[in-house]
Image 1 (tube, each protein chain N blue to C red):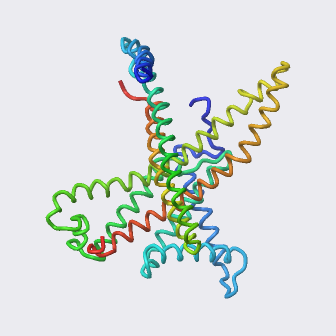
Image 2 (image 1 turned 45 degrees about the horizontal axis):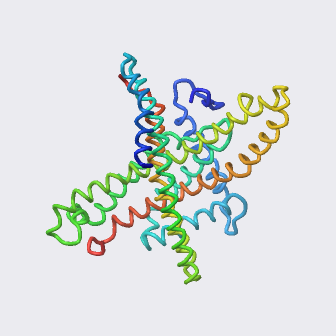
Image 3 (image 1 turned 30 degrees about the vertical axis):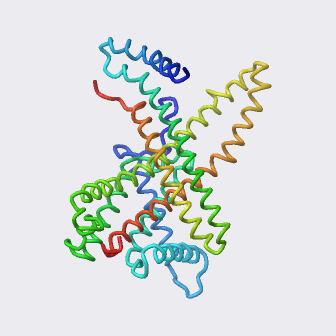
Length: 250
Length: 106
């Protein structure tokens, strides 16, 4: 992995890369929000229009999954969704690093969701009412159900963080290997090395690899960036919905 | 006959790892096993994940053909299901990268 490491173009001394690029994502989001709400008009144009479309999508998803009381959770879901989406997309730019490609960032998001949905559930139904969620459908099954439910609840932040981290890092490793193969240490070096085999076989192979990377791998990574952000917030909404529903309807 | 052949092959491939164990080096004995574990695990995980996702997409497409009106909701459920199945193969990838590239203390 040593040959594949390429540090980002901006690196602050003493601050880890994922923190630096989290600040970059925060700055971009703040600027977008500022531009969108600078002069709010009844008929939206420009950035305000785009943000209203995004807002409508989020509200639609919240209404679908949580119901009419879902709008209360728009700040959490909207922030998480836009942050994770922008952070994923930042990793696609060569020279920048995705903060979500680091387990620290994704674990932070997952722990926020974990703590929040428990707090929401307890706040809505009280501690005793929320504890009934863990006891299963019938009361005499409780000693069996409580450990099972505890483990399944603990697996949720683990899977949330690992899923996002694994997708981003896996895509990053794949792209890094392809760039290495296509670069001066790989096929391009062979094609330019002056040998006949290099020119006849290396150049077309290089062309095919470039086309494959630009035409297939990059769109795939963009799709994965959107998909993983969508999955993260969809699962968060499902956990919140499960926490606030009545224990009888389990 | 084929299964015993596979097991013999796996046993032979682990011999270098056992030879490394004689060294005083801290983590060098782990490398051959790590390579085999990561490669085999990832291959198995990808294959089984593909089977699961194929079934999920097949039922989703069947359901969408039966009820074109519900196609949007079925598609959303299908996407969520695919991502959840995919994450199981992803855990194997994370474990493989962990075992291969982390410097374990002696």
